[in-house]
Image (spheres, rainbow, N blue to C red):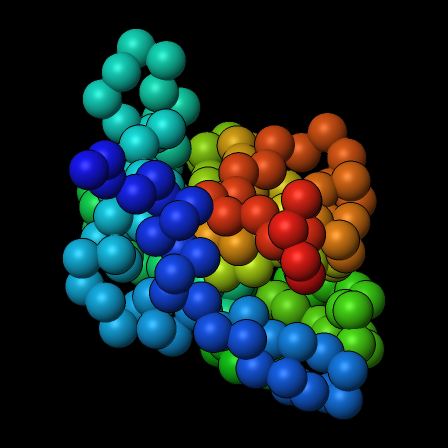
Length: 187
């Protein structure tokens, strides 16, 4: 029997939570995935695979993760790759000088920030989060990092909600999703 591919592993560890965080939203909860050490490890190794080992690998200097689940994924991924981690936080959570971006969500607006010296100009950064929905958070984080001089090489995510159009909103920015929902399956 063949090993399940990474998309199947992810799909089998997602939980739908209706009406969270607002009425009408179906939240894709990765908590069961995080609780399965083997699957979580496989996810981290798969996300790292493009950035290590081969002549076509895209080397990076840091991983940036978006609060909150992006912290979990990003910190583990940074450790796997042997690079530093940059937290992209909700506004008001970081000390020192920060830069901010406000953006639209599928259910409201939000503001994120990073410390103004979080990356050095020209540093190659892999941006990660758990879900790509409308793309607002990913674009804001990408632009925030670029605004302080980082070269963001890719946005990587565990789950993409294709029916919300985030990949299209990302434009020419490279996107990698391990599991796509709404692309030939029920959303």
